[in-house]
Length: 184
Image: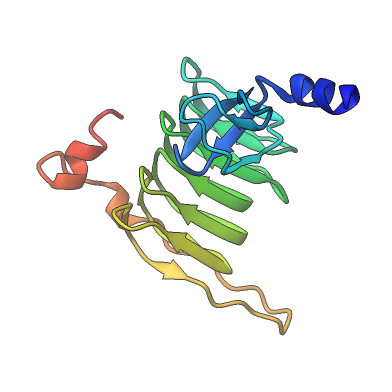
């Protein structure tokens, strides 16, 4: 019993993705001894090992190439390339870039094309302006999306041409989406 309790204590304060908060949160041990979200007390959470984390105070212009999973809470402008790894745009993340990854989960805002070999998931607080090419896509109710979606997969070995650049990324500040993204 002691080893189980010490295991829970060692996991306390780990960063997790809370499904009820729809955000990164820390774990805590409840009075009943279960691991729960420290903000809302939910036990509906998932541990996401995060290798690289660009905090809210970080701003990058240019090409970002990472050989591990990446979480963006700050600003990135240019191109993000993570190969066969995952990108997560956190609720404070603002990305104006083309993204190449295995999977992309968006709870912040993205302007630019997304090319994912597996999944693109736009959560409730997420917004995307650009073209998306992936095998599977999930867009939460009330999430914001403007662009095209291509889920066609090819098994004959022929590579598909790249998607055209997102014309919709040049949003006028007079439009609704322009006001949404006017922070760039």
